[in-house]
Image 1 (tube, one colour):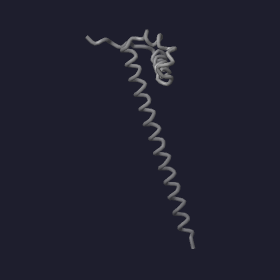
Image 2 (cartoon, helix red, strand yellow):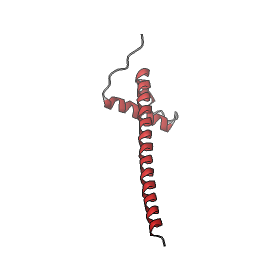
Image 3 (cartoon, helix red, strand yellow):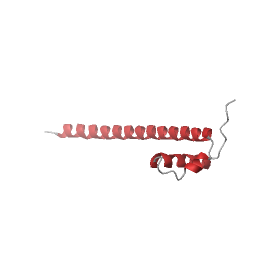
Image 4 (cartoon, one colour):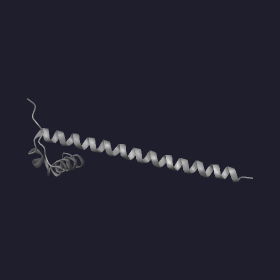
Length: 90
């Protein structure tokens, strides 16, 4: 039977994700949180990693969508000013 991942409050997931991210950023030489993370069940850490990956992917898509909208706006504005310039040329 597969073990169930506990229904933790949002702050609990955020805390675990923050600790994992700290360990990822600071490498294996900085093990100050290693003991704390070792106390977290493996399936909870795996679920936290999945949540973190999903949030990063979703944030990346939002950023890409925003950049695309900004580019479209700039391209439209540039095309409009270019048309105006052509219409007023001698």
